[in-house]
Image 1 (cartoon, protein in one colour):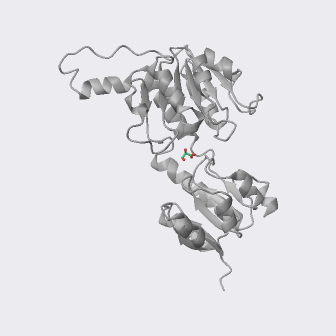
Image 2: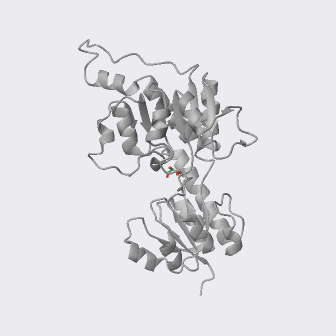
Image 3: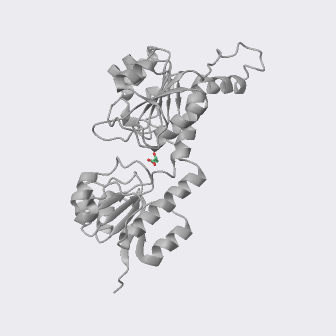
Length: 325
Ligand code: DGY
């Protein structure tokens, strides 16, 4: 009988990463479209799984996999997984912070510039022949220098966005559930969430999604924002009460929004967000570069193999589970 660990890979990965796992494990490859009952039956003996947030890891999954010790996701977000249940079952969940910070910061900046420079309106004006027909161009955009950026969630990504936008001349504020920033965080002014919303010209969300942050931005919070302000969300859709945002945008209670994430992904074809001229929406591409996605897969494989080899993983979400295992 093989003494190699049993692992299941539920995300597409390159051959060299498969070879790394196969050198240590007996591996089965499935994908997120596998029907749930078949999936649970197929993975009942595994000790490690490489997953993405498309796999729902809940009490039922942990009960069906009594040998499971590690769930390594190829994402920084872990809201798809029931962490309390994982900890109770002695399963360490590992994510991929750090390697995607620059990519998400790039996209956040891109959304800020898209909105303030009216990039999409201007591009559409050219593409639809308005420029060639010498029609009236879209209204002028605005500079960002001297304006205030409110960063909600002051972890790695929030700090990186702060550094970059300060370098471009913005004043920055931050809010988080803690009020003592990491020692390496850039100097920035702390505000309560209400004050940050009222003072900012751009509010950008970089916080985890959990029950305490679901609908962190709803009707009340949107009403605190300036009518000239923009909301940017490159974190998780359910941080924002989307119908309340749609109402605020329709009524012009805020100037616009840039969203890389929606409450329901993929959205319905008739989702009202697509009818709003003051909204830029992207299909959850914050980490979608070849280089960043490769780094995320490499990092997740390292986490998986470390735990299966009895070593400390790079980035456990619930390190206390290592004691329960
Ligand atoms: C992440 O890493 O959490 C990205 O949103 C992709 O899921």
